[in-house]
Image (cartoon, rainbow over all chains, first blue to last red; front, side, top):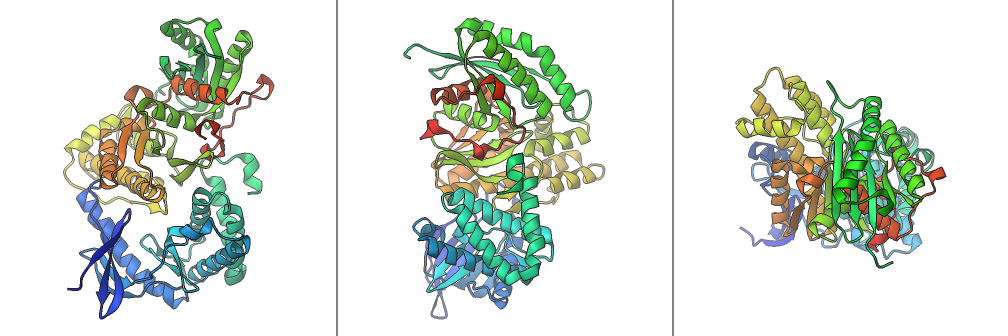
Length: 217
Length: 330
């Protein structure tokens, strides 16, 4: 058994730095949650673990960089995968030049476009789940993702990205979102219009949206 | 001004007509309310607003009397201008405008959701918590950043309290349904799988309500209540945990009507334990909709000069929490 060192205790999982066949690896372990009923808890953790492992591999086949999955233990709720040694995008956004911001988020948009075009939604698009490493943007954390051809799910995916930008990067959120949409359109082509229309519909449907904000924004 | 000021607050967003009086020192001197309880079904907005109109005078004079004040002692009138049910909001606003004109004092519009947060901060003394605001109409995870309360997670469809209340009515429990559901749940043994829907930082309760209602005839009531509450609260606790990990706030404040739920308190205090955060719950008498929270928030706004002329004191049924500047937090 390789040595394991806890490097991050997230909300959902613990991440251990370890070694797999001489390669640096991450063990992601979804931990038991005392606040949930035990039956519910093992169902949620188990299904998210297998879901994530599958989608990580499938996303990469669609041209979206993700960590490589080495092994999965569904019962232990563990995934062993390659280690991307860099902080998440969240840490860089606020210090970015307008040009770098536009370029980065249009690439994020392209990445999400490739995913959606291939019939996968991520389910938790935030700047914490994107890791820039040696010129490549990696997408991680697919536990809430799903296979779908549904316009609604794709719309919710983008709605969540927009909301994450607004809550975590409120100063640059509009510019970042516009660049994101540019990139998304470039990859999705004609398929993007129904989705983006739905994004606006989802936002309007959202609880308490000011009527004057319903048109533009 | 050095002397103590008294603010009168009017609450009328949904089923409660409330009048409370807060002092500039942060005391709630009185908090009188009258609740509209429908004979059957949920809130009928027009009937609720008629209830409010008929109870307004007695509620306000009751609040003044309990505080030992006269209308002339009041420095400003605050009212909840949204979000809420249009007819109810308009009734409360009409009452508030009248008081402000009669007393010739400033009128202060208050966002109802912000009032739930501010009363929680006042009552618990926690300055900068992550807020979990759960009620019949709202399910919001929020924290202060850059001049506003930002929304980190919310429901994509119906509110937590709405889901639980509707289910309680469906199985024949009378109002208020949540405490009765909790009693049934305490007797529950078996967990029945129900839709657990977390999308990013958001939750969705409509599928859960539909499924639980559909199973009501087939499953044991206690088991079903247990499962419904576990799933519903588990979803809130999960998004709260994500938000606390993300924002790195050192404390969590549970506020709103559903804050009274012992089972939800237990779940969230678990979350806080795991993240070394302090856990606070708004006191039960300030958990549900009340005029005191409007009065106190009105005072905070008044200090910043956020008053409105009667002519343009419109209500806004869709007024979002994160649209409001909160300069008193700077």
